[in-house]
Image (cartoon, rainbow, N blue to C red; front, side, top):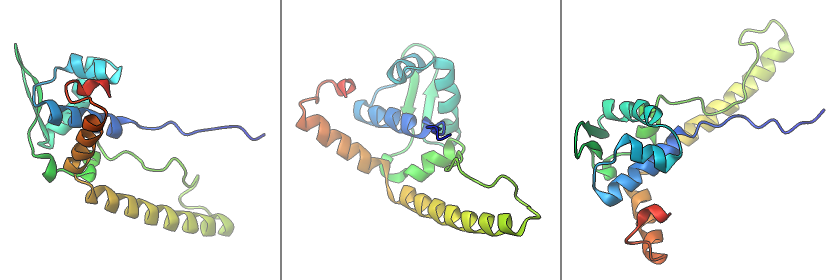
Length: 157
């Protein structure tokens, strides 16, 4: 009866961080097509996702020849939490309660214990997200690129 039932993961945060770090390193406009190719997805999905970052003021977009997506803020002023929120702050945990207002006393006690633990874990994660600036990640990325000789082609990462 045991089965590997892994929860479907939401990769938007890690994918957009990937894009933002490449954007910071290259300092050129990226088209939705280029980003889609980088992420192995489609340009419509890229535009939809990047729109949330644009609305929050982290990126801007220019139409036409030479246009595309560019950074609108210095990465030292942007945290993981900022990007997480700009993307809609998806649910952190796949586990949860089946019934929010159970009549069963056992279920009430279990729900209370689970809610407390999940709320505490989420608060800790959000605190950690807030403590990590994207500039810290960009610096680590640059160090890896230099160490591996990828200075000229950051997309080989």
